[in-house]
Amino acid sequence: MSKKGNNTAAVLAGLLAGAAAGVVLGMLYAPEEGKETRKKIKHKANDLADQAKDQYQKTADKVKDQYQNVSEKVKDQYHSISEQVKDTSDKVISSVKEGYSKYKDQAAKTVADVSQEIETELDGLK
Image 1 (cartoon, rainbow, N blue to C red):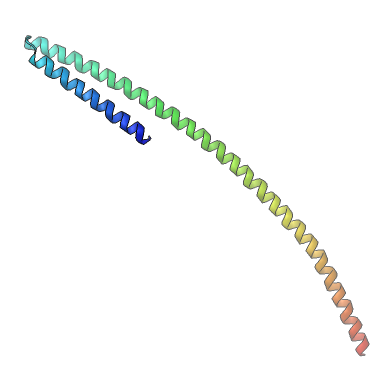
Image 2: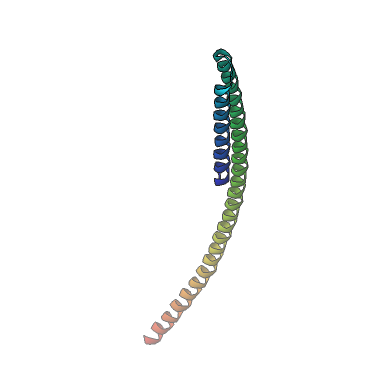
């Protein structure tokens, strides 16, 4: 997750914790019966837990979506680069084969010419 996402999560967690502490303190100092206060604290705790679960699910869904988007982009780029490398290597191989054939024929002709010159010189020396 990005730094911004971490900061957002930290701020959200801080706000939820502060809200929970404020609610609990407010109820503890309210002039009500202990049983009623405990019931309110339990209800508020459940509400806050539900809010935290909802926020967690939203964040998890967002991260999952971002992961899928990035994953697809990486796959597309990989395939694109892979095709470019394949095309380039095919061109290089073709060029090397053509060059080899061309120079092979030239080398064979040169060898034949040199061989003929050597034979002519040797015949002249006899």
